[in-house]
Image (tube, rainbow, N blue to C red; front, side):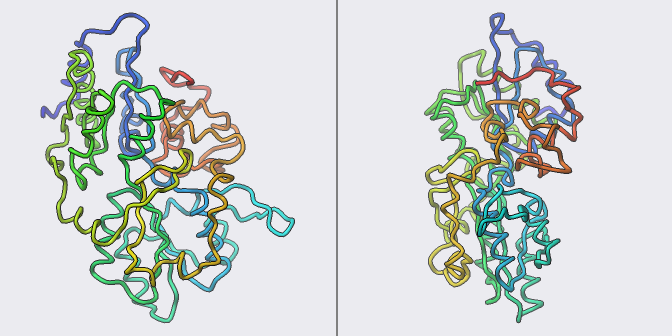
Length: 381
């Protein structure tokens, strides 16, 4: 692949344009992709007929509200230390009435301020090291993420974890969510740019369903502007030629079958289950759960009274928040009713404004405020 962004921009601009009034909607399925697209100003450099849409590529954004709520209640109600990735600290849950009063603690950050022992970590290995350094203390690792995070979690289990470490697992598989979006028909797409980091683990072939079942162009991209533009050129060319295939534009790290060791480790340590996605609902075969042999390390089994599944339908998004439409590619972030008014990075209402992989946070950081509207607003479906 030619490593020159200008080259790929020129190739895109040289493609025949569709009939007047027709747009080609291309979804990128990665928060890192959206960050590169926004921060490098790619949207402003493209022909008007191209719409780049952010998809459900932020694990913080789609982590079920009931899982965040459970983590908060566990650390407030039990003498434990909760370990989790830093982005999870500020994810808000919905207002809840407990014993007739509104619960004011709506995030792990607020729970920490109230005295709970919560420590941000950067990797599963750090969770193991922390627990081993204090064997008399009970630790719970709130593990959130896609395949690229769950593979190290599986490796952590395979290598052995201390008796005083429990897992509150909220792992998700990426491709079933996209399959669900494409099948439901709520999001109109013409092409897909698949996430390079997931494909590094799981392989390019995992995205073959986009071609075989939905007859859409698909390319895998890395995180540079060059790789993304090359992938965009590929799907536009496929669209123009009506010839669809998986184009690997991240060949330096991605192959057809992924990383066999990582995939086998995932299969040995974790089960695949139906799982809830915040904003998208329950999706078949989209979640990871601990194998039965790890039951003694499952926080949900260890604290059986702390089962908050009743929140699955009541706790999707806060009132007025349109994050569900953002993660499903139906609207752009600045078309959310709360964007920049009630919801900002300082005071996030919805999960998409929290993480640096969340589309709303990325757009805000990129300077896309209401007084600077998006270059090409998305159609509201």
